[in-house]
Image (cartoon, rainbow, N blue to C red; front, side, top):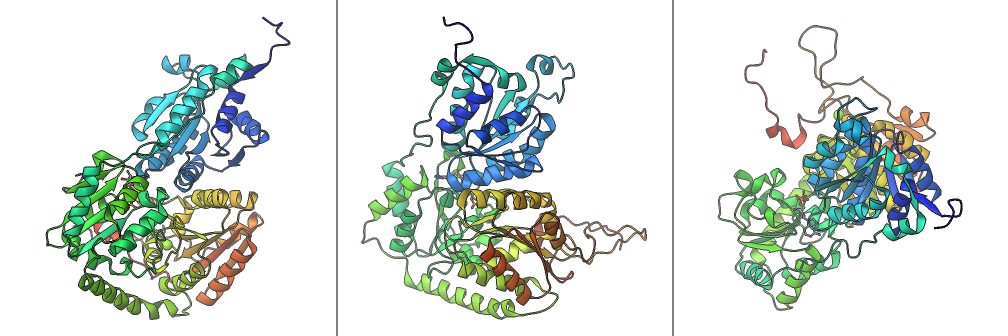
Length: 569
Ligand code: ADP
Ligand code: MG
């Protein structure tokens, strides 16, 4: 063996960086601290983009949406116990939404943790992470870092995508080994998400079912957006002539203005359709579980395309399950359909077009008001035009009324441009998503936020200013949650539980960090400010003053909000 001083060495820090680079992982979202501070520094020096946040949950949300946008696992890096727990919400969110993500957390000494002897930030993180993700791994030896990252990547992106946890005890980072052996221990993942080809029988069954339909409908979900099979999906929709309904994050996969888009006739198509083909959408609460009032009383047949076989029959019978990746499944449908496949019946498509035109016409005048203070429709009418004029901008959207109304009002024109609260309807994704959307796509970002929703991640405006990201945040400020008008019934001086400081000026937060802040009190002012922000690319926050009485309790999902019948009047 060579004398010690001539032997080239590597360590855990460098092996992890090399393993990331070997697998084209070029961006890390995290919060520095023990034991990963030096790792972040070294990764940055080695050419990885390391974005430091103010709270791990926001870094985690950023990683999760980076996964959705790129089909590569988004990486979130945290410290042990509390940092890990802060990141865990986002990991569970990624798993629930089927976004590939890896939460990499430093952890304390195994020997002390396992004997529960009270180490610095002691916690059995691996055990805690397990039920919230697809897979969880711990690495004890530097020579296993390569294989561990390979397993993590494969687990995150193959099959149904989701969250993976990678536990790295502090000691691992400093472990030294021979550099050549270290290099040899790294693994480049080949074909991380292999195509999953549907069975020919399943394709045949699906097409037979479609052929028999009088009132067919295609529902596109965020799985379809994730799959990046945009051309194949467009071909399927247009060849079949079937009306399509996009779920919120599938908006823009085909433009909302496409003649076959049934977005503005949603309740009609759910009720009246007889055959429904789900593409990357689950029959969960967002689709009323495929049954009940919103689905009408006529018998319905479901065709479902999904990569996860267990999704079939989750809520109702699926008469034609098609299991495989959406790209392969839709391509197989397209080639089996050929050019002579019967078009969706004209009486059905015309009835939908009519309904849709009526609804659009009903909405139009409300969107054109210039009221001050603004109502939701006046403000959203302006934003709708801005997205129409800038279709490659990314729209981020959270809140209650701000979410529900913006989803309906703002048309999307390109795939994967609308990012929102997802499967949980969670509040707090806003600024994390905004950072990752800007970083991963290089496109301008417009974040339309309820004042309450914004509060969950508001401190990240500093992050946005620090990295000089082209993000324009519009806060629909109605002084509170749902509405700003609630009154405390008890007579104590405390404000009601759902209201905030009246007349807050969120725009001043942005100015504190060198960004542009604007207070907008009318749709005209709002329009000017957003256009200026989108043109300049400067981090901007617009405090859009909304009438505190506008908005309704729980937005469109008031039915999920239990209310006491016994409440004192
Ligand atoms: P939405 O909320 O938009 O309806 P969901 O999150 O409920 O969407 O559904 C997404 C579905 O897409 C999940 O069931 C997931 O398994 C599936 N999926 C994700 N990626 C793919 C893919 N590449 N191929 C096939 N199915 C996918
Ligand atoms: Mg509000």
